[in-house]
Each structure stands twice: as structure tokens, then as C-alpha cells.
Image 1 (cartoon, rainbow, N blue to C red):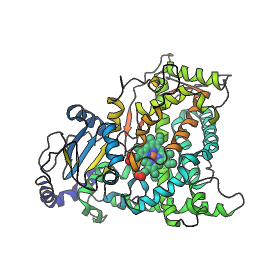
Image 2: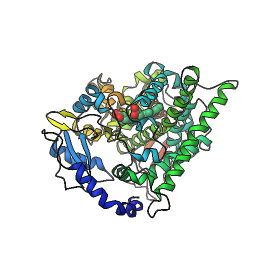
Image 3: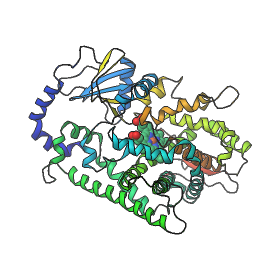
Image 4: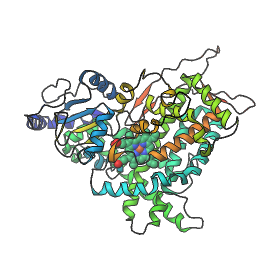
Length: 504
Ligand code: HEM
């Protein structure tokens, strides 16, 4: 990816060198920056970070430098926050400074700049959060339970019919619940036009909006205006395609929802039905807010379910305990409903442990400071990119962190620990920008997990000699981290012939 920028970058190198030299010359306070790795002139720590797995580099730095680590890449100040205590201090108590997102021209270039997760901390973000709150707040979330259960049953059917593709079925499950929540219209399987559109947009964003490109465009905003015919400017073509897709994805499902709202039957409970019911909401605000939901909701939730399956394969004795709890409380072959949830503490503890063991967003979503600040005697300049490193928090703040152990969230007599929910909340972020979809995600995860674990047993696949194929957990890290496809055997628990199937 980065290579397509190089000729353009080379043409500008002298100007940039000077610009960085000026920007990074001298410090802007007498106080020290937080401790951090030694920086080279101009490029800073650009070559010190493992771009594929930045959380690994940050973990090493956390061991050496502690709670707050400072680094710089070219002229960009970066602070990595490695403890929950400091993250909460900054995000909750100094929220007016720590609630912005980094400003990168890549968002406007690719047309995603009006989506909630990347919006700057200002009027438009506040409007969007207010609208999301109307439909996602804790006291209204129960009305989507029928949607979660119905979609989870659809997930079971899909796995039963075609278990090789269980990965895709998880994506369809979480994509469908996200879209039905947003637009109030039932999704018609994997060939539904809105699912196809949403998945296409997610793909082009993942391919085109790489962190290298975001970094280069932030360092060299002029690249945004380089014409597509210029050598190395192929990103312009991808960006145009992405912008067009964002526009279609914004217009088409919204227009469908509006039409359906006027027809007999109308819309199901949803974000858009709430918006259309509120006379004073601007249509464009509702539409823009809706556009960002799928992208924030689908992959994070699907990745968490895939981690659950991986954890069950690697820890069969824990899976046995989930099955035993389900069979004792709900009954073998009976699908749980939300009424059973409180009586299934072990299943809940497993879900909390899944999110801790491999958080879907190991580095959260980056923030940016809107003013100079001083933390524990260290200077943090305005415009610093702030990373709340939940990966390190999930490791440093627990005993034997690599072990998958749901009992961390249980009391000695097997009840859910009263602090478990609060402890888990850091995986949804902090302060004013905490994930607005966390209650919805929590229900979607529970419904999916309860359905698949009551119906199936997940095991290591076997080779032709009947020997188990070892599974080495491998994770792919984009913005969302998710397990690379792994071999797996899915066995029906509901009686009759066991169906065994493996990923190719
Ligand atoms: C397991 C699933 C999910 C996880 C782990 C997750 C996690 C997160 C995290 C860590 C953030 C950044 C918070 C921060 O900056 O402190 C975030 C933001 C966000 N999430 Fe989620 N999320 C999940 C599911 C969902 C769902 C289902 C929805 C919508 C229905 C959603 C909507 C959003 C939105 C709109 C933002 C941007 C908030 C803002 O910038 O103000 N997420 N999420």
C-alpha cells in the first residue's frame, strides 16, 4: 500500500523535511514529556513500531516505561496510556481535552468523515451521539431482543446447513442485526442488497484506508489534492470509489426505510423509526448517523464471536462447563432466551473473558487532545494522538493473563462477580466517547453465544488418521483484531447423527 505513495512523497521530501524540522524543533513546555523510547531526528520512532501488530510494540514499551509512554512519529506526538486508572482519569475527569479524534484528511478523501467514530469532538458529533442515545440507551435496549434471538436462530440454521463457512455466518449474523437495528427492515440473507453494499464498503475501507496512508496523509495533507494521473496517486481512484459507495450506502437503505415506514406494517423498532417519529430531527443528521452504525457494529461483534469459538476449541473443559450449565438450567436441546440469562453466570463469565483474552479493539479507537495538559508532572501537548492501550490493560491487570479463565469473573460460589460488568466496560472504551452500542452489542453477543453453545460443540478438527489438528491462534490486526480462519469441527449437540465439518 505504502509504495503507491512513494513517488509523490519523494517529490515533496524537501518541503516535508523542513516542515518537520520546524514543527518538532524545541519543546513547548519546561516540563518533560512522559518517558518513552529514544527518538531519531525528524522521523522519531517511525521505524520502532511493528505496523502489523502495534500493540506488541506498545506492550514492550509499557514494560520499560510504565503507565504513560511518549513517542513521536515525524511531527506527531503520541501518548500511549497503559492503565485503566489513567485512562479513566483522562477520559472521564478531563473529557473536554481527551474526547477528540485524530484529524486525518484520509476520512474526507474516502468520504467517511461524517461517521460517528471519526467525527471531531464538536457540534455534529454531539448531535449524532444524542440521536444514537435515543435508540441505544440502556432502558430501551430490550425491544431488540426479539431481533437478536430471531437472528441467532437464523445463524444456527446457516451453520447447520453449511458449517464450513461458519465465519461468514457470524459476519452475516452481526451484519443483519446491525442493519435491522438501523433501518427497521428484515435482512434477506447473505444476498440482501444492503448486506452486499455494506460488506463491499467495509472491504474497500479496510483495503484503502490503511494506517500507513492515514499517517502519510496526516503528515502531508497536500497529497489529498494530488490528481489521480500523477505517478503513485492510485489511491485517488480507490478514494473516489469509496466516496461513491458511502453515498449509495447512505442514501439507498435510508430511502428504502422511509418508503417502508409509509407502507402497511411499517418499520420494526429501529434507529430510523425512532428518528422518523421525532419531528425535530434533521433528516440529514439521522441519515449520516445511520451510515456509521454498521461499520462500528458488525465486525467488532463478529470478531468477538469468532474468538469465543477459538477459546472453546482450545479449552474443551471450559466448554464442558458451559454445556453443563446450559443443560442444567435451560435443558438439553432447548434454546435459551433472555429470561434465562441471569441464571447462566458461567456463560456470562465466559463472554467477559473472551473480550479480555482478545479484545476486538486492542488499542481502542485513537483520541486526540484539544489543549496542552500535564499528567503526573508530564507535559502532553495539544494535538497529541492518545491511545488507550486496552491490550496491555487486559494483560497487566490480571493474573496469568494468557490463560483463558472465566472464573476471574465469578465469586467462590459460582455467582457473577458484582464488579464483572464494570471491569468489562473498558473494552467498550472510556468517557464521553465510550461505545454507544455497548448494551446492544452485549445482547447480540449473548444471544449468539447462547444459541451456538446450546446447539453445538466446537472441537479441533481431525486429520485423515483421526489425529487432532493443533490450532495455533493467529490474529489479524486492522482497526479490528480478529482470529485468522482456523480449522474446526462443529458437532451438533441436539441428538441424532453428529455432523462434523471442517474449514478447508
Ligand atoms: C463487541 C462489540 C463492540 C465492541 C468491542 C465495541 C467497542 C468500541 C470501542 C472500544 C469504541 C471506541 C470508544 C472510545 O473511543 O473510547 C467504540 C466506538 C463506537 N461504537 Fe462500538 N463496539 C462494539 C459494538 C458496537 C455496536 C453493536 C454498535 C452500534 C449498534 C457500536 C457503535 C459504536 C459507535 C457509533 C462508536 C463511535 C463512538 C464515538 O466516537 O463517539 N459499537 N466501540
